[in-house]
Length: 231
Image (tube, rainbow, N blue to C red; front, top):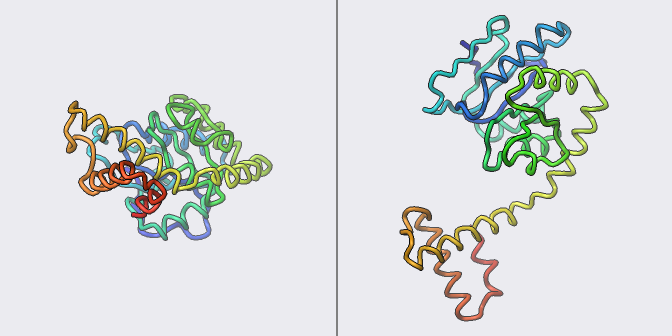
């Protein structure tokens, strides 16, 4: 039972979550931590806004904010320009996921100049480095404490913003795409050896690009390889 809103709250502080609403995203713990934060510090009146589509895996997870249900706002999917505005105007972005292969929202928040609180699990510490505050995602008390610290301590907020803006510069998206394609290439070689079929792993258009890379490699024209990465 959360409020669904079409528009961003005007002139109000808010804590932001961006991502799907599936169990591994740990939304129930986020809502519980938010309630604790509001109950013990009445001066904090920030709303909690959740942006993202509901997953079929959401199952039995229920967003039951008992005392602050009108301040928990589920936005659903929003277009990129609106999403950027949400990131920029948020007091704090919280990403308490239990497991991530990568985890893009913390980096998007950093690029927007917004401090981040996130999990200390799976790949997230490697992704955020020392530019976010990390917590045990199973510990709602620690999550509430950390959110309160960021909201109430301007020095910590400004430090996280500066570190985040610097940290996100490490992520050159051409490099990310190149490394991803390199993984596809490894799988391609495995398939060529007959262990798996192409359709198990690789979209047809990517398969075509890998074939082109192999042809360039065979003809010693690797200087043309950069052109292949232009999607």
